[in-house]
Length: 431
Image (cartoon, rainbow, N blue to C red; front, side):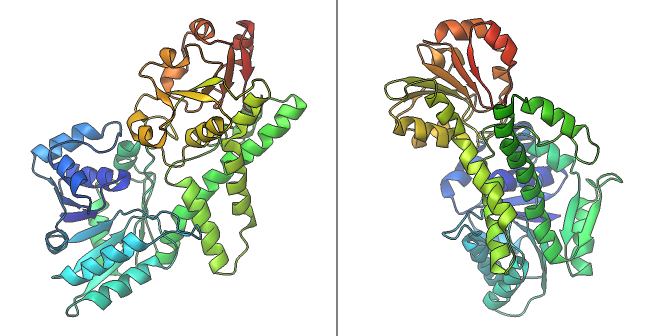
């Protein structure tokens, strides 16, 4: 099938490459000419494990093309996927500027029946808005359908998630569009990985509901972590005991420095804005967001209780909001570093893949290409992102290199007893 993917960020690039790998003819459209030029030269513009191999294979096979020409991209497509950003606006609602712009262009350039698929995370009612904008910008009436098809790609395992989705949600009111999308996705669907067809509003809400539920679990554990510290309980033990309940399960029950990234923070805020716009209470999700924002910089307060921050030097291990990605959007590390620098501390940073993205945002920080060099002569180490390479470091070397043996384990990846036995001053979350 002939597909156009509008937007070449994490979702658009993985989706486009994935569909090309299934044998479709895919054109990726973006207004960023520099990004398109780099992709045309074969340069990946994001870090995502497993993506480079299939990207190069499908570029070489002629199934994956890139362009800034909206007319050509629209006219050549049977299915058009909207994978554009929906960042928070001034009210913290989803900013649909890019969605509106793309819808208008589709209307102007439409030359025959198209299925327009919204993969961007958008509030309920967006599909109807897109439908009306396309109609308003058509030169003559041409039949089309709008479908809600939310993405569930986790950065760091996005290729795996595309190839092995837990579910495929198709929100549509058109049997014709349903048949086309079902045919496109049939090679990915299995008995235990079904295609679920719903009405459009339900499909639009499912993505927000999923992200808000996961964010709630994280904030739930972070709130409990405070009680653990006051009472002598260990949040890791509480998490394990809680997760063994089959009604609850173990995932997303880890306390730490809070969630970040392009989804959870903005989607929780956008859901709050949508609830309020419809006259519904939003207390629960406002609390989830509030707990998370406070959690991000909690470690700075813990450090300040052990260390005079002004004039000290603090090493940060991990800049990306999670392992296996270079995405630093809403990353807790950025908030932590900002507070440390505001308190007068110098900051050393190391991350396996995210430093180039972070460098423009951290002009005062010193960047290191080796984690051990980053901590040399520092007064404390703060582990912010749980990269695998941090889990089995030589703690004896860490103790020697630090000016004082103070470590803040923002993801609870170390055994407190082992570190304290080595003479380390250990601070965990809820432990």
